[in-house]
Image (cartoon, rainbow, N blue to C red):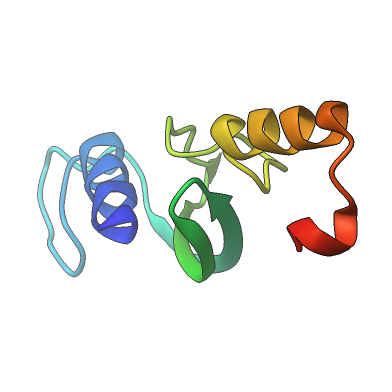
Length: 90
């Protein structure tokens, strides 16, 4: 589902879908890179993030260099402040 959202954002930015031609084209694709993301529901490994020739597409799914969703960060802070052993958390 995350990959579908990322694909649709690139489609909107470029103006056409994969392998499509058209006068409304605003740019070109440039492959993918893989990304891991830790979310509140679990760790997602190997997300295919599309690239464009103009550079990476900004998205709301995650920011550049972000590896965890904010909810996970909040849980980690809360557990640390309560003094729970990191061995018990992992």
